[in-house]
Amino acid sequence: MNETQTSWTTYLLIYVALLGLLAATVAVAYLDLGWLNTALALGIAVIKALLIMLFFMHLRHSSRITWVVAGAGFFWLAILVLLSLGDFLTRIWV
Amino acid sequence: MSERQALVGNSAPHHEQRRDTDVMGMWIFLGTEVLFFGVLFTGYAVYRALHPAAFAEASRHLNATLGAANTAILLTSSFFVALAIWAARRDRRRLLLTFLLLTMVLGLAFLGLKGFEYFQEFQENLLPLPWLTFAYEGQYPQQGRLFFNLYLTMTGFHALHLLIGALLLGLFSLLAWRGFFRKGHTLPLELLGLYWHFVDVVWVFLFPLLYLIDRT
Image (cartoon, each protein chain N blue to C red):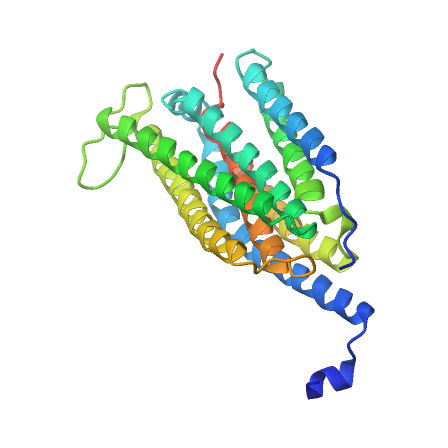
């Protein structure tokens, strides 16, 4: 087996960070910050997802081809969401 | 040795490459899951962008406390499954078994809370199912119904994925108990872990997008 072994203390640290980010998500939701609410909610979710993927899913220690595959899925999703929103949100211009 | 082994060899670098390939293959499968959930998220994104006030109102009908509790449950379960693999890699069978079972129990707890939530919504007539009444209290009943359709579909499919994961965890617990995942033979366990973490990541996005649109 080649995989670099992650220590259980690292997992614990990431877990605590994730719980902290969850608390932050909930706390921020009850404050009125206008457009920042959505940006923060999504931003925190992305950070949580990255922590889970890099550490719990061992992406940090995976091969580069795996990085490409993992990235490709989300890159595709970004295109789908952004272009769809681009379409619908600009229909009033036509 | 098999013909294939004779051709490609039995060396450590070869084992490493096969392992990397298997992991990559699992990520390709997870990529298809991103496709699957992605289109649901896109539908949500478009309709929320077109009806922001309506979606904010509808979101407030959901129980954010239950949603947050479920998020904490899933995050803990991801932590536990990572520890299970940690234990497996060090040949600590009892620890492996404990963490696998704990992960499964947490997954089932999530499903239990989700079911209770659905039941609450059923009682409030908020489930837009054809054979039920849908009685929405708010300014935007049409978009409210749309929101609840998205909510039910997205969390429903997520719950289905979770159930499959929990069942597999049960099966793998049995296999672990029988000694299948010794040090050096942990790959299937790690791939199941990848699936479980992915289901967690989906929920990490579902929770704020559905439950926390506007709670001010």
